[in-house]
Image 1 (cartoon, rainbow, N blue to C red):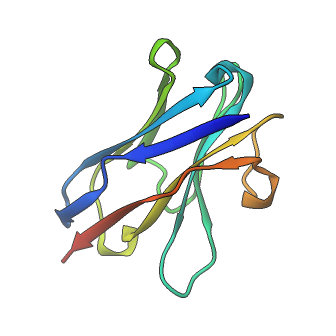
Image 2: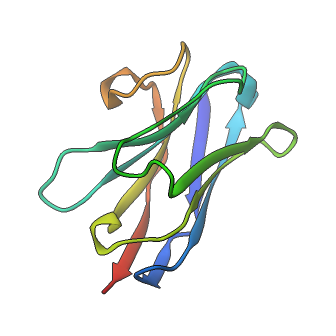
Length: 123
C-alpha cells in the first residue's frame, strides 16, 4: 500500500512555471512506476508524464513534451513535475499515481492515486 500527496499547484500566468511535488508514504518509491495525469472539467483524465520503477526511463504526453520534466528524489520519496512555458490549456487538476509494474500511459493501469492539485493558467 502507498499513499500519495500532491502539492505545488496554483495560479500562474501563461508563459510561467510551476513545480508540482508528489510525496509518497508506505512502500518505498522505487517499488513503483510513478506518473502524472491531469483532468480538465468535462474531459477525460490525460497522461502527462511517467517514470519507470528504476528511474531509467521516462515517457511524456505529446502536449507537454519539451515543456514539462518529471524527476524523482528517492531519498525524500518525492516525485516532481517541473512545468515551464505554461499555457491556458494546461489548466487542470493534476494527479500523481503509482503503478506496481512498468511504465504505462493509461490511467486505468495505475494502482494508487493522490487527491490532486489544481493548476490554473491565465491568459
